[in-house]
Length: 321
Ligand code: NAD
Image (cartoon, protein in one colour):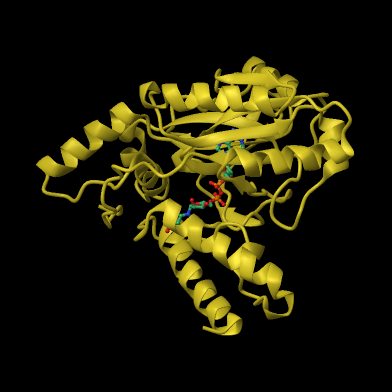
């Protein structure tokens, strides 16, 4: 197949998968297969830059918003993350950081497998909660997010702040939900991520309240006044937001890799799903120096776990039920 046709076909295929995943919450392929095709498209595009299409998924974050909710224009672009799939690729990313930063310090966090959301607090009060959407426009899901018990409606300080995080369904609640659905003759959800995404786009807030979603907040979207990512997370905790406790500092590739191995070993024991580890440059001034590509920060990377052999079959579900 000539590169032009291959790029066109891959673009269309990936856009269809992205629509099923982000907009319908009904993926028809495994994430690893999506990631493999995405990689292939990236390689073809970098070898043939003149053939890159305007609708390429490599230039966009997420997907369009659903019509059931009001659209919300984010004042700050909510970036995605670049990803790596091996120690070699991680080493390349780390070497690139070292070209700009002499002695980098990294903070390694769990990559929570849920739905990306942002919380807008004014004078310490929760005024809006929105999905990431395409990074610029999301869905206003405030009423639903207010039903998540661990999201504070007011913070411990009267601050204006925009916080990014992940809403997820703990494994125990996911198992309970699917057991109930089966008893009711409904199709079970494919995985906790789809269940969380479908739940947050429910039009009936009572259903949201019942399902037991939870959150981990991991980043400030408004300009942070702190010096480091660790300080941001500690500040979040002080404000009453939930922060994941499993995080470590690392000074080099070996230390990052040691954390990845530790997390890989404990992954099954966690109460929630993760799909990798996020490595971030800890110092916020250095983050600013490194900046962003069109879709992701240069100062962070997601290491994604290899696909699990025993993945369950992807089922399509009607989450409106
Ligand atoms: P992503 O999920 O790979 O990574 C970025 C997201 O990670 C952030 O937006 C944030 O929400 C989340 N995250 C979790 N913990 C974090 C932390 N500690 N710090 C920072 N961010 C954290 O990127 P994406 O753009 O949301 O989704 C792309 C991925 O979705 C693909 O790589 C693929 O695996 C999957 N996908 C699958 C299909 C399919 O059909 N199966 C289709 C489209 C996308």
